[in-house]
Length: 184
Image 1 (cartoon, rainbow, N blue to C red):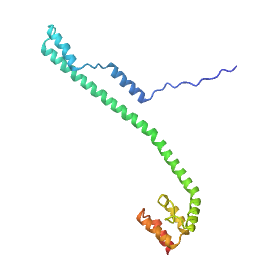
Image 2 (image 1 turned 90 degrees about the vertical axis):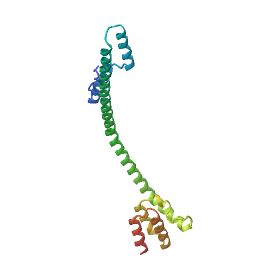
Image 3 (image 1 turned 120 degrees about the vertical axis):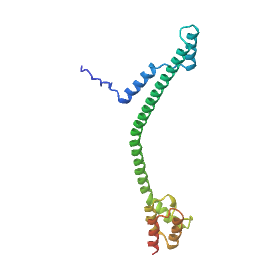
Image 4 (image 1 turned 180 degrees about the vertical axis):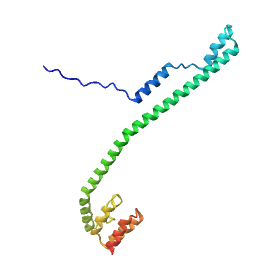
């Protein structure tokens, strides 16, 4: 019986993992004691005669100053790590977003292309029957090329109506010049 090979587990760590680990270590090594608690401890030492008031005040000031410096360093490191994580996420998401946008665009074009002949025929039939107010249904959602393709079937009065609608709406130069050419 042949022995099956098991895939090796990857134990490599990224720079981000190492930075995060170093940050965790720094936080674990740090001590967070409020200033008033420090003052209380040193006041007790002064009261017992173990140190002078001046020494106690100086020691509290130095400890608080060092603590603030360490906190500032940790916060800077945390901000750097957060920015690094944001960049990694963005670099991963951006290409996927771009691919999704392209896929949507392709699908939309295919759907429009497939629906265009059917909609154009529906418009012709609707105009023959005298139904509807606009010579081209769904006009505002059509691309310039779709509008220009439908202009061929329109009578001069309908072309003028579409020209007015286009001028009041998107005012696309290519559509307006195609209308003028058809009226020509």
